[in-house]
Amino acid sequence: MAVLIRKHLEDLPALGVPLHLALGVFDGVHVGHQQVISRAVQAAKREGGLAGLLTFDPHPIRVIAPGKAPTALLQTLAHKAQVCEGLGIGLFIPLHFDLEFARMEASEFIARLMAAPVRTLALGEDWRFGHRRSGDVPFLENEAARYGFKLESVAPIMHDGERISSTRIRQAIRDGNLVVAEQMLGRPYMVGGAVMEGKKLGRTLGFPTANLATGDAQLPPDGVWAVRASLADTRQFPAVANLGIRPTVDGQTHLLEVHLLDFSADLYGQEIEIRFEKHLRPEFKFPSIDALRLQIQQDAKAAREFLKNIQAM
Image 1 (tube, rainbow, N blue to C red):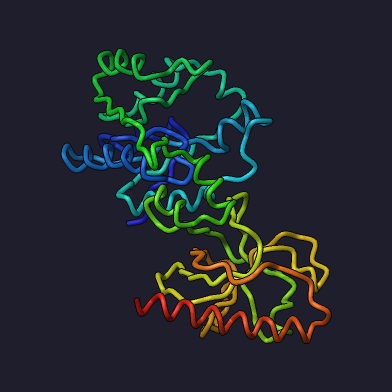
Image 2: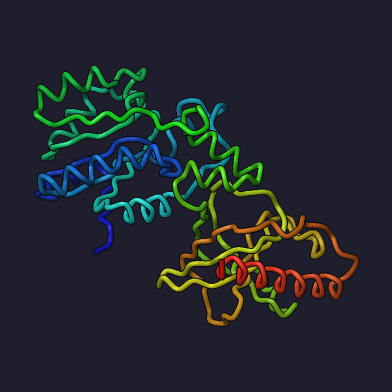
């Protein structure tokens, strides 16, 4: 069954089942976040009811302190929901975050949340919420005694002696250090997006591409990549991707274009996940379209051989 999506606190009581909720921003749903989520999932399995994830959209720091906000996030909201569903979450609650919401006192937020039959709240022990960040673990311990829910606070998870954070993972991806990013994420870094219609330049070169709408997701360094593409129907294909502005054809927009090898069907509107496997070369301007076409043929061959080799390992 697909994950349920509810966008307002007022929608939760009508679900009519006990709720076990993980609270937080969860950008990237890294291994630290997964520990929090697992507490909610295990509580639902143990006590019955529905495991949910309550998060905020947009990222709160983009509203409270936009000058300090990251320019890119680790995943789109839809991709976050998809990853959480794979972790056992059955209810996804992306609350709209604006200045009015930011002024809400922590006590009011909990009172509104407790209008639903919430039995468990799980969160990182250092997470704060509410006006002036007044909602913390000691506050929630008092609220748990008042409302009768169980509080699960989770200590930070470490990697190489430092706390795992979305900030560290974004930096690793920017640097192209996808091995370290994968270790902190607990899974390969993947970018999800819907296929949007482009200028069909790839078709004229003999390599039709799917242009992905990746939103503001953090992307690795520009260039040509060997990637794996996963379709919504779970089929996977080896692929070659170009990330950048396409200077040879006077491109102006930064795009992620993916050519699926051994695939020819229409993908417009479909959701695709891209797993970056190997950076093949930087992006640069070619002297002619024919030179670009020849290089794309070589890139596709290199991607195919690399992906075939690692699959055989």
